Length: 263
Image (cartoon, rainbow, N blue to C red; front, side, top):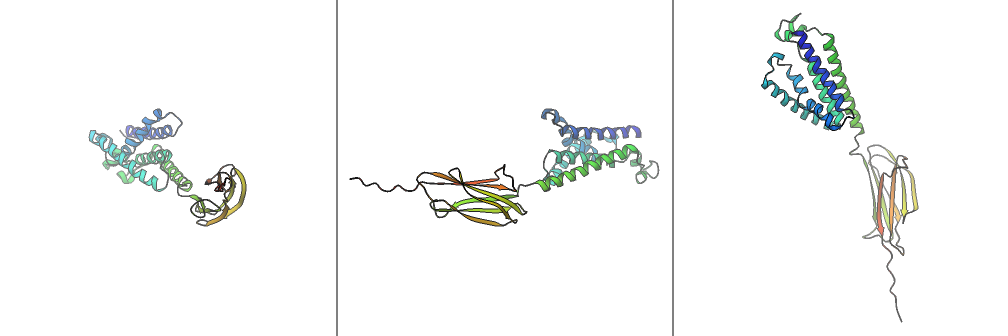
């Protein structure tokens, strides 16, 4: 019985690892979906409910509870991943698989649960190679989930941005405009700015360094001419000249035509 129980736990552990690997693989979505469902609906609850129920007590009610527990763990895991900014497929897979593996590793054997297994029952549980392997895999997955979550949180730039605006002085473009820049990147950042008038480069501010939260404004000539044209400002960040980070513009209308007097 002990051997069969160990094999069952080992099989569940291998199934969990296989599901995680397949879900994270480049396989088509239809091929990954069944294994993702196992991670969401069955494996975490199945491993944790085994802490309370022996394998022989697995009736229909226990299976329903395992599914409900898996769904509950998925919700709680999602909330935790959202806090650290890692609410994506790798974060889900590593977290759910890690929970399942750790649950299997912590499940006592039938003899230990009955209180007469070896040296003192549960308190004297002997760890075998299979148990240690499952525990090591679970700890590795749990550690990987934490590392991945930390990397995701550090790279999460949803609230890191740069504000840029170009506003005419007065109600309409006519003689001058104000170009503004605000650094909300949370760190000191370097910028390059180009101003184009009708598609031609007319001004440039290289290597503008702003501290986090700092704002800078600059005057820009927006004098009306004989034709309608666009006044445009382009922003480059951290010396990346191949990518326009921000772009703003205003349309400058032509100057009013003088009244023509006919004889």
